[in-house]
Length: 436
Image (cartoon, rainbow, N blue to C red; front, side, top):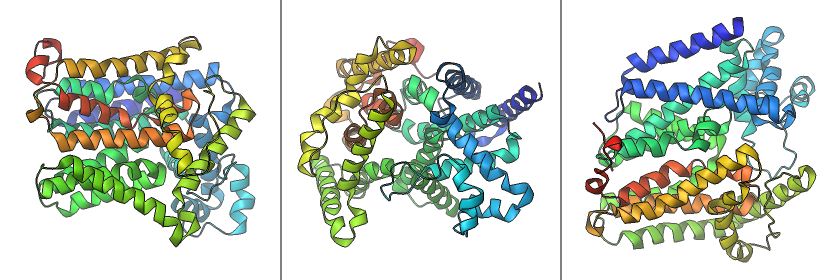
């Protein structure tokens, strides 16, 4: 009963903030709608808890519990050794042998099973969980409520960043940002994706504002915070975005003329940088890391036998090996979820979402605006990011259940890209979707 009251109390607190905080004064989104979206996210996060409590019962393999349990180990230091807690939380002075002896060896996820030398983003989530313990008193559902609220802030910020590009299609944009099933479920639990949306939204809104004019110091601070969140969680998402952002900035500083050439140039420069980086240090060999990530995932598949594995050949030596697997990578990300119809409710939901995603493309083309009225640089930015992230996921993840989760950062960008193509005068025939 105490756990229920505490959880409901935090839900009420965040609903109060949604009603009073000026941040949630968003053109095209009523505060009541934002509050309803928050409750929907809490419900989705709770549903995910139910699935991993009563359906998939191996707690050690569920991310929603892995970080929570390891965070409890870190938090246990607060009472007897408070300085140890602070050092582990900040990462400053936490490398002494006693930290391994007392805490890290008691955790299941502080050290990777397969270590490529790349930053272990599980550390960020364990620290986040240990910080949330100050407010949750050990009640898991409080972590869900906080994650849902932080994710909501990120998605609302993404909406603010995007709506100016499609001002007459606010409701369609809101659906494309908030209501994808995988965004609702994976983006509402105390796992990496929920906080990733926070970092994406904070970073991008300030970048777009900087393109339009000078930023106050608070804007730079928010941008830096969003950058740190992304670097601490899934820095590869940021890496997939940067070449497109550079090209978009180039177009803003000059003109939209030759936008395709500018995007090709920035992405070609990124490829050259990736190929040259190992000459500076072997640890910067991104292509080798991608190949190793695929090998690690295939090793994990052999050990666990997941039901949604799609047969994938072992990647040959890069860069030729990556080029050969481009078609298979795109098949995995955009087509393979259709194969999961008969693998239970999660598989059915994945297939339905993917069918909706594929169907939205011809619908956008059917309701397309004249070519001259399309914001080509922004469309190229969305498509470039989606393609880069899809390739990276497809190269490394041959399991449909995992890639459905990993691909959710691209769904809001894909939605914006489709809306940039669609003519708002034609979609005005859908009165229930018009922005009041």
